[in-house]
Amino acid sequence: MEIRGFNLLSSDLSYELPTSVLQTPKDSLATEDATSAALVSGSSATRRIAIIALACSGVVFSCVACTNTESSPGLQADQSPSPTGMVWVPAGEFTMGWDGPEGRYDERPAHRVRVDGFWIDETEVTNAQFRSFVEATGYATTAEQTPVWDDLKAQLPPGTPKPDDSFFVPGSLVFTPPKGKVDLRDYTQWWTWMPGACWRCPNGPSSSIEGKGDLPVVHVSWDDARAYATWAGKRLPTEAEWERAARFGLDGQRFIWGDELEPNGQHMANIWQGEFPHANTKEDQFAGPAPVRSFPPSALGLYDMAGNIWEWTEDRFHPDAYSTRANGIPPGGCCVNPSGPTTAADPRNPYASDSRVQKGGSFLCNASYCESYRPSAKMAAPPDTGMSHLGFRCVSDASPPTPKE
Ligand SMILES: [Ca+2]
Image (cartoon, rainbow, N blue to C red; front, top):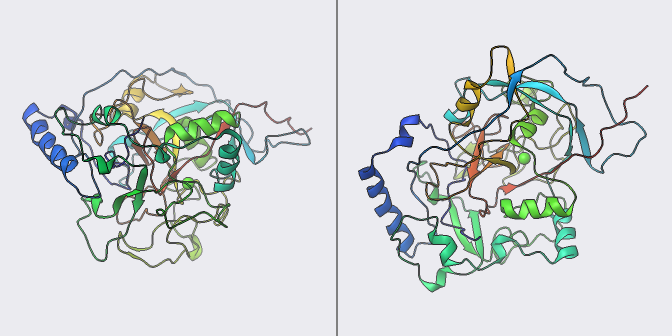
């Protein structure tokens, strides 16, 4: 299913979303419909759907009283075979979400969660790894396929006119910094729908990934990420698994390495320094995606769980997911292996029937804008969305490592 460009709401966008937004009156929707329709019918290279409201959905979780069964953090794979390039995350309980002042609506409230043990990729999936998948299967990503109007209009306000035929070419959304300051509420100022952009040509047809095999693959949709994971005998992590792995051993701290953004002046993640989105001072050496392992690993040995590129998870997005879940947790209990809402609802893409959570933030994240390199932060987009700061990593349910004697 191909939408591209119309679903431009997965930028590093800071938003605060009161529940009341989900009950926008019909007349407000009509205004936004007109805005969206005008944007879609226009010839602008960038298009977007306005942020508006959407209704609720069912949310099902398994929340029980928990006993303290935290596995030993010292558990490591010994001489027994372990999945190549993966790290074991022991079963355990942790605090998911964030109630601090930086926390956005969809990060609240913090609540206790327990997940079973699993393996997780040490790094984001790289261009070299994704190339192996494509060469073995002949797979064509969403961004390499021509958009289909019937798929597109299902995610747009009713009555939206069909764009000019010139729109219907393969492409993806590329970060294109403006020359100067812009209104930070208008992300179309720095996201451009670019024909020909895809994982092989991340900045458009004149770019390539030659010599960049160790950079994370980008412009992969959720569908693409899942296809790769299936081929690799893996799967995408749930949001709870992702956050458990990211936080591991550092519950209740703002970042995955502690509470301070740059301890001893050290850059711990590939994020944005300077004034977003026009002036990147590159104090961390990178203005775009960095080769994986360019920054220090987490205590668990994982790289780039903060920054570099956003990472798809399996979970559907719903802004009330945590509040609904927390309401179902008994006193002293926790939620076990939560897999997210059963139905998506994303105010950023109100007509899309599905929206999937992304975690970790990207090279575009900046303290003045979204701070999404915090482990509780999240974004979301419909599963057919590709962008130049969006990739993934996989998890595996392979047998756990044998404890050392
Ligand atoms: Ca990342």
